[in-house]
Image (cartoon, rainbow, N blue to C red; front, side, top):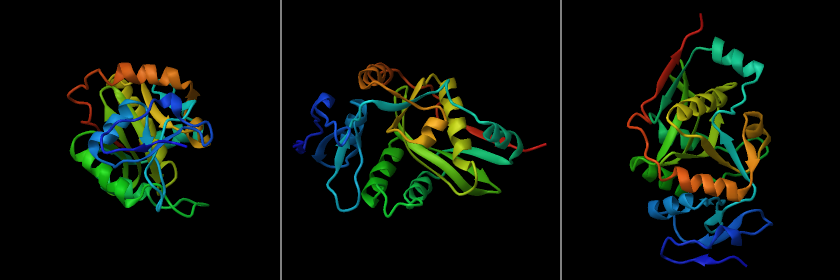
Length: 233
């Protein structure tokens, strides 16, 4: 059995998370900004499907990207050099979320349900949630979004409408955050796609120790002032 959360944004210790399914910690509560930010500060995140109660997770080990370890394949390096594209930050946050919520191949539904969209848009309005966006010919073609607390960024989801569009946003995210002092991006759970971009599994206690240090560090004033335009020669 897992605990059912009450009205206050208080979570059980992550050491109580289940081993199967990996990381399931608690259920219930709400998606208030206060509760979500408390969760991220403790290495916990919400993840549930339509018709389910809100479920809270803290898997072990944890998938994370060290921002100086992003992998760029030969094909991605070619795209970075040869495509005409822009990378923008926070110009279409809700549109990015809604694009990420579209079912993928082989999936019947999505965990980015309307309540999640509303909750993270509130976080965006408060300055805690951000999007990195790939634009081509004035059209949003890919991107990702996540949550930021201090010098910690928690990646949530990405989408792509053109080949490599989400990867372009991912690379620029890693490079920009690194330049701003962010050393680690939380990627939550293992996927081959994230591993191909350089993310790797780390022990949960190592992740939590890093998180505890990084969320206390202030963000530079220019943290979210980023715009990049690339025109192939």
